[in-house]
Length: 250
Image 1 (tube, rainbow, N blue to C red):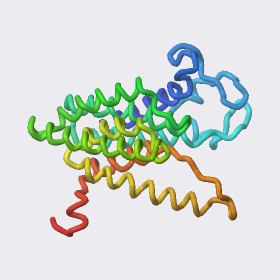
Image 2: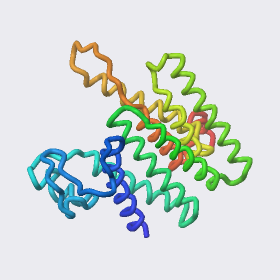
Image 3: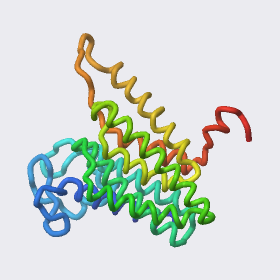
């Protein structure tokens, strides 16, 4: 069952890659054959097998030999692994169904943000709705769900405040509803996930500054959605309580 769940995640991630590439381009993402990004040749069914086709072809397109991006196999491995972890946590329950739907939409947003540095409002609305339903199923009680809802609103309001205070230079306004949805998924671990997101972003930012060419004074604009997603998912799947980690309490 775990293998089947992983395969489902990898297949969905492969479809997500196509969706992200064609979204808002006027090109349909259901009909039409997939083509090589380098030479535009139609891809064979074997070249579309998630994860496996990349490693079998040694990371190169069979049609023209161009080097393939690592984003596709990494996203397929990541979503497949997250699906398996979700299955282990939740079992075959309605909560699992809504959780994997939320994870799938989350991957769409992260990949789109990486490609275009923007979070489309239509996809954000779907993600927030899916996360709200998932959070409701995950909450042990109605009062716990409303507590998570208040935490999510506070986190969202804080990011919106940063946006307006910096006049959009620190982060985009779309990060606010995005974090709201993530906080609903993380539930009681939302605060820890929020802090983890900034820690992860700080580490990656320092590494990027370190690798910047010597003497360069140009700033580096990076999307914040991947850091937010990583932090909140880390908190949810590990159940690490930040306050307990800091204070050393059990």
